[in-house]
Image (cartoon, rainbow, N blue to C red; front, side):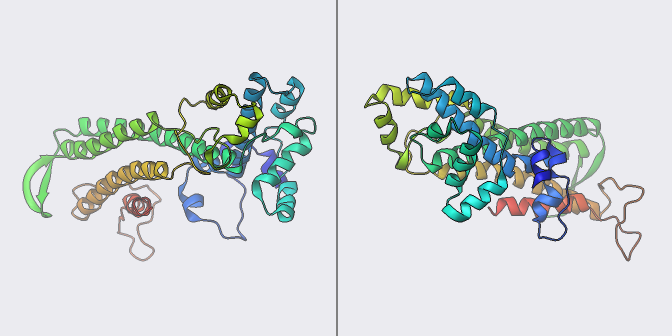
Length: 324
């Protein structure tokens, strides 16, 4: 844990230490990028909780609550100073993850302790953090999808005049070109990209809704001033880098938002599966092959084999995403 704390925020270095004596999910260890793994790490999660608590306190001060600059400065100085051992010990006592981290933050911010999580409920930090993590992940998917489309466009242009056999019903049909076939893959990814952009443009947070989504606790803090409660929501959203919150929530944000995100990711996975399946089928007839490194091994028993292992991995991972 000490090593993890020291490595906080350093991306791949933070994930580099080995844990060979415990089970690790291969989807993370073998296939996830270091950057994506960090976005869903404990460090990212709990430091985001603290940033959300800070945004709330700053906004409450701006709207007139008695919160001092000294308290805010103390919070700012300890956003990444997370004592996991203390939090884990406290959770065993309290049986509540959010309260254990409120206490952990309060220990390093004794002056700010009375204003941490003021008027909020657990889902204020839990849900908003998960939505921030989701949005940051979508930004990463966006950047990688742009690179993929650029590479496919280059490939299609380079091979636009290279003839290859076309198929219908997986039977030999009319000639096409390798470039044209790549354009089919590219078009699917472009459609996925358009949906991804729309989803990101419309992406909301839960916002400042209070217990069960009524905002009653904040209304009490501001002595019945509805305008200040509305403004509080706007200020917190702005400090977190967002413009929109869902209009109505219960204790949690509507899980329809998760479905919308999974739908977009499923679409990208479907396009990837289609492309990789085409490559695997064509590789069987030596129409198209994956790159094969000098030291790469196709089989432990048959040295002549050239398994399309990249496409196989794409297909298996895509099926997993499509099943979510």
